Length: 128
Image (cartoon, rainbow, N blue to C red):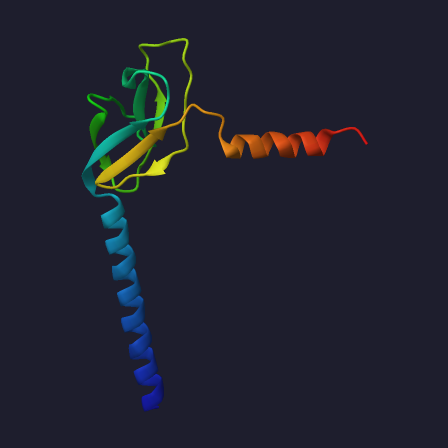
């Protein structure tokens, strides 16, 4: 009899603790932080050619002296995009989770990942 009461009490405490932990995690993810974004430009283009875009909010910011600042939820992601000032230029990077200090790298060279994709496609569709 006492065993069932102690077990029930333990389960109630465990459920309460789990709910509290999940609530704290959700609150932390929705916290607004100031994100300092640094651009590392490995392209032969001006820094003005790039902008940073936040996901899922869609906020956009320009770089000034390779720096940008945005107020975003901790759960947001950011990515590099082409600046609206250069309509003929297209660029987008892989989204990155934000932190207080985040670096974004603009690399316009042919990446190893892209080479591997093309090699895989050539291998898949080559004539036998």
